[in-house]
Amino acid sequence: MEGKREEIRKGPWKAEEDEVLINHVKKYGPRDWSSIRSKGLLQRTGKSCRLRWVNKLRPNLKNGCKFSQEEERVVIELQAQFGNKWAKIATYLPGRTDNDVKNFWSSRQKRLARILQNNSTSSSNSNSKSHKIKREISAVHDPPILEAPKFSSSMEEESSSRAQSCSSSYIDNCEKIKMVALPDLFKPKLFSYDTNLAQLELIPCEETPCTECQIQSPFLQNLPTQPDLKFSPESQELLARMEDPYLFNVFGLADDAELSIEQPFLDPVRLGNEAQLPIGPPYLEPVRSRRNGARDDDGNPVTTDAFFDDIPTDVFDHIEPLPGPSRW
DNA sequence: AAGAATCGCAACCGCGAGACA
DNA sequence: ATGTCTCGCGGTTGCGATTCT
Image (cartoon, rainbow, N blue to C red):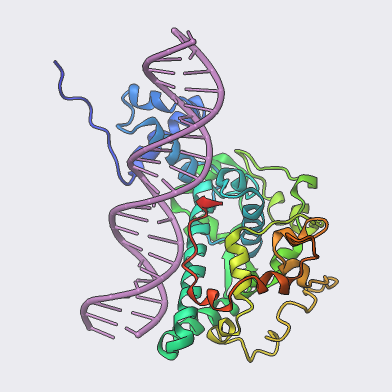
């Protein structure tokens, strides 16, 4: 008996392994992953090879580059639309993998959860923690100019410079992108895009993402209205928290002239120099109120107040950290 | 300066779907 | 019809880097 099977390697990939994998893909294309091991090229499972290719070695990936403002918006929009279909969402983000999107989303969830959790505790035992939160929020409120690379669609160029990620050839081509302030994510601006994705001519970027469809995509520029945009329970929960003035106290925004607590969401949303979109309470209403009719269980019109009236006010002081989106 | 907390990312795991013998 | 294999996806974990106290 052989007894001793070839051991399967796990863990971080070496440059030599990458090279072997790239050569295999060049020869046979991104398939037959299991044959890589059966041919003795690598001691990796086909699964592992595929993952490595998809997440790190594939052409035109934006390895090591933060999500741009537009990418963030797209993810948020599409997540609301599709749920945790990361692979699907990733097809709308050139250079991003499902893993990227997944990681981005979970980081964001954790961050929001922590902010909310800190808010509920710090509203009573104030300052030491809220200092940190304030800093955190101000950091995202005055976002740095991040550098995002332009990408060539040339596979050869890409594969030769890949291992350097954003560090050399990519970074050389970086263009500056102004990041949006995170509090914008809380404001209805985020939802004002009113995306009816079903009506959009979205062209998923498959294996070979095009730079053109990244920022310039009609989806990003001119999003039509979507009367049926739904909020996930967590989004609604988060929006509900927006009613809590302590939230903005904690964020250090309560006295911000631009962010009036009295009417934090009633002001028209400003989109750069573009026309202002009238964003009002409808965008904060629960899903049921936004579906034609918007009636409550008794057949009465539902208003935002009516919705929140159903909920004991102190409920928001004990909100658990946001659960994983898997429940949606 | 050091330890703690948090972040960001890479990789693995389990499951389901589809292809194929 | 059924079992096996492969692939793809979503969830989770581990760990180094960074930031905070």
